[in-house]
Length: 442
Image (cartoon, rainbow, N blue to C red; front, top):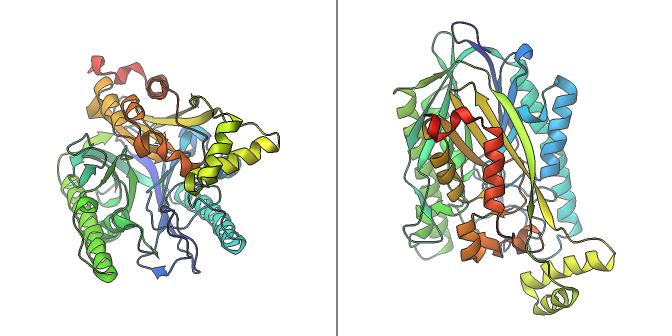
């Protein structure tokens, strides 16, 4: 709750999570050497909202390609044991930059070959540090809580483009939460946009936050003393428009062009955030309450032993994926038949509901939820809490392709989802977001 003047205890913190050693980067299976250097530091940041009496919520945003489910659960458990913050009140979002270090068990089949032991040792070392940093930044935000006022607004940004279909659906909305002290001075902003962080491409091997990292940097340069947090919406089938543009010849020319685009996309987001904070905003007078549920999403019919063996003979990514599953069968271990998928929501009274969908969620989910719930009081986020695979809608599942099931070769699940997963996820969101937010109750 807030006091009668709308004052809420809010803390913000950040910690540098840039490794000071070379490490294999995630995001592109063809990039198998350890990193060449650093374009910009990468960060973990946190917001803690509410007093101890309220049971605060804690948001952690990290610049990484994806968080394994078990990593988020471990960090949440640590924080719960230290502070009492429940799992429903802890959310972890990742920017999905493809220029950040690998984490242990994140997209484990990405490289379609076993990671060399020395590379894996470095990845395991970074993962241990990473969990400590996530815990550290969350606890720091809780310690740093001060009286504040919260507002939010929705802007629009145009650089996301559907990467499957020319002119296909996108979500260009830019929800933004603002934290101000009791004197009205801005302390922090949290903004979300539905687009892949893939501007730099797979030929570059430097650590970088991509457009989301540059957006945070631009906001903080323009607004000294303000902490900027960026998360990602349902942009699994959206790329920055610059990824579809012709590139010059030459590796250095391509790199400099892509880097310029990443900075330009970040600057555009920064400009929209600055417009929003100077425009009309809606007050949030309640500390959010959290809800968390897992839903089992079934995979389609599993391949037979003979089919796995035939796929192994194909070689390449198909063969590697099949070999790993064949090894499980040979050890008497079962093949995964369904995915335990986490869904989370925070509700600021009846003023705003924020949905956290795990992993790479296609745009159809946010567009549908905005039809079924009150779009003016709804914030739909993805790339949260876990990174198991792409989450296709029924449309994308039927169309197939990379997001429809092909990417399972790199994440590890045995096959595409069975029909019906979209409704399972949507039904779970409706259980977590109360009826007061339905479109009919506007």
